[in-house]
Structures are given as C-alpha cells and as structure tokens.
Length: 395
Image (cartoon, rainbow, N blue to C red):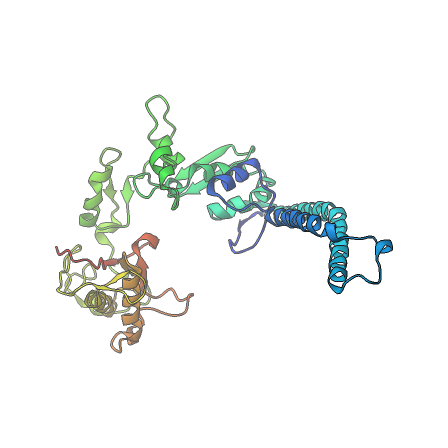
C-alpha cells in the first residue's frame, strides 16, 4: 500500500507564497478587481513615457559640444547641461528598460517555479493536505503537482462557485461537499448587484442539492443531532421537515452539564436535585430576560451599547461558572462590536468578576468564556448560549 507511512499535512495560512496563476485565477482577479502583479513593470513603462516627454521638451535646448561658445549666458549654459543629462538619461532608459523588464520577468518566473517545487516537495507522500479555501487557491499549482484524487469541502454552502472550481484539477476523481444550504450563503461584500441579478451567492452545493428532477446528484442528510436539548432543537425541526425528520441522540436526554470537563469539580450543580441536568435557579432551557436598561451610542464609531445589559450578561456567566458550568461551554453573542467591547470591559475590570477569570489575555488559554459578535461566531460544542441584542424591543 503506497499510503503506508504517509502523514497528514496541514499548511499554515500565514506562510507567504506566490505561484504562477492559471487562466481561472486571472479571471478571478478581473472579476474582483484585484491589482495585477505586473503593476511594478507597468509603472516603469509609465516612467519611461514621462522621460520621453521631458526629453522632447529639453531636446530643443540641446547643443552639440562643438557648437558651444564662450559668450553663452549662464542661463543658457544651465539649460544646455540639463539637456545633456536628460539626453543621456533618455538613451540609458531606452536601451536598458527592455532588458530590465525582461530580467524581471525571468527572475519572477524562476522564483515562482522554485517556490512551487519547494511546496510540491513538502506535499509529497502526504495522504491528506488540509487548509482553507483561500489557502488552497494561493498554493494551487503546488497542490496540483501532487495529483490529488479526492477533494473534500467543508461548509460548502458558504463557498463561491468560482473559488470551488479553482481548487479542482484534472486528476480530481471525487468531490465531496459538506454543508447546509439553508444556512449562510456565499457573500460578495462589495458586489451586491452580482448577488441580486447574477445569483453569484448561490453555491454549487445549493444548486446540486436543489437540482430539478432527473438531474439529482447522490446526497445524504444527517438525521440525528447531538448538540441541543429537545425543546431547543424543536425550534429548528420544522425548518428541515420537508427534507428530513431530525431525531435526538440519546445523549441529549442523559448528558449532564460539565461531564466532559475535568475542571468543573463538585460544584453546586452536582448537589442540585436535577443531578447535573439543570442549572440551579435557571430551570428553563430557553428564556427571554427583560430589563429596563436604555440603549446608548458607543463612544467609538456608530455601534450601539447597553451597559445594563452588558452587566447582566457578565454576571450571568459568572453565576454559571460558580454553579459548575465549564467556561469553555459558555458563549455570549451580540450583534454590535461596541456591546462586545462593553461586556469584555465588565468581565476584565469588575472586581467581582475578575477572580472568576471569565476571559484571558492569553490567546492559547482555552478555559475561558466565548465572547463574539454574531456574524463572526462559529458553533462548537456548547452548554450555554447567551445573546445580548442591545435593542429597544422587549419580549
């Protein structure tokens, strides 16, 4: 078996690399109006045109040395010197610029090929190459040299179809896409007209799943969920009722809060009558918390904040931690960045909250609460989700 001894290779997206572009990537540059890599050479050409214009103006003052005379005025002598310098500069640029441009092109090609060979060497004998969509595209030629057999795309419903096609090669025999076409679609931030008229925000995944009868592609739908308790999942079941009937895994009915965490210990939640299934004092699994705090304008930008709501969310998180809920299982979401900063400030500066260590300045510390705006939040295994909408509306 040729795969014996092979290892998975995950490329860091921070590594800098430039590779030779195919026609598809050049097309993407045109669509998204990305500056061409030949801009520097184009600027050299523009400089040469400017020199030509200056040379034409100064050439009128140029005189051969044999025509110089002693009684020439100082002003005319300076004009003659400038004309000579301009003439020599023009001759040098006219002769040297084509050679410089050719040398730059050759050096750039050699550098690109060297990087491609180096990356292809790094990918050799690896059974799995993992990375983001953008990371794959920027290293496309190196990956293609490994002749990949299969491509697996996760969150395929959020990937623009041109980007997905760019990751395929002539050796690709199998394409597997995983996603949910009823959640987020691809987005072109500055090309809303493309989304409305050209439907560019419809992913290949969605088109294939919703293909008309007779053009279906093989697909499988997960029918068992393990993330939510039954009454919370009930909010989404009807949304997928025409596709699949979602069932709850048995762990949704038996798993206790914090049982997967070694840091929860024997806290209040362990001694409650519900034996770890419920939070003492917070019996409903889903509830709306009303308050009389007023919304304000953030001190920075045009974002909105609600200090009273931020304080409520912070102290609720502290209470959950005190009961035994793992910090990493708690997420607080808000639509406004200003409110996020307000909540973070409470958690880090309030003398009652600071000992709870709800947040950490260490980016490697995973035992902290998750604080995020809604549009940047990525779901993982959570036990408690709190939202801070910062709105005048009351439920």
